[in-house]
Length: 109
Length: 109
DNA sequence: AAATCATATCATAATATTGCGATATGGGAA
DNA sequence: TTCCCATATCGCAATATTATGATATGATTT
Figure 1 (tube, rainbow over the protein chains, first blue to last red):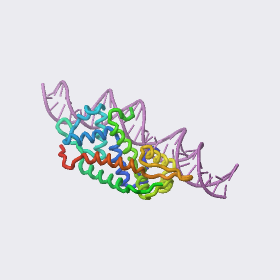
Figure 2 (cartoon, rainbow over the protein chains, first blue to last red):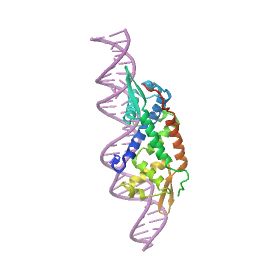
Figure 3 (tube, each protein chain N blue to C red):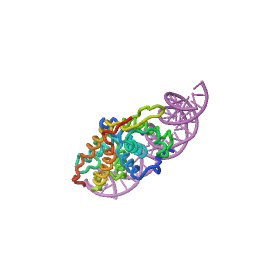
């Protein structure tokens, strides 16, 4: 018990769940918004921006990176993170597929 | 420790995170897809559809309901669930806001 | 009323997530 | 080389999630 029973679901369902889970945290949403807003990329200003410990931010960045949503490039001593455009676009399309499949006239019980 | 530090983020960021978290599970994605697919609503056929225990499905439905994403109407002995159209639309718009804010030409590091 | 069906809730075990101090690691500056 | 700066990782405590059997609740049938 305690573990998600992934084998009961399709690869697509599992993939989407993993990506959404990566985004489903206020700190990670804030990080993504900041990465988008600053257009170019930032590294550890995030630690100052939000009042979280450096270890915490680093861990959130790692999770986003593991999910393939952002990428990090080493830039001297610091690391520059940014949105991974392909994954971002793919996720958007996947979400549009899910949300678009509901027609706004479906009659409910 | 162990708790998300919601007070560090905006109400919008927290709200979106909560709704995404509700969706970010393969079983709940599958449930939503099924609810949409069957157009009208279903109740406990979900238990047969996926190979999960009744208690598990019931709990997933509860979480989706708590997040406001679905609604359940008592229909005799059984309960009929369906997408909550307003919340669904609102979430779609919120997501479009987030995903649309990234312009596909932003130059990265 | 008793048996049955559909669903919710409780209690519990297994596991995952969150956050952070402490400690590495690795680059640049003095 | 030695001293910092930026990040990553480790180890841990607190809390949350996932899944399920057992049990409750409430409507339907017999």
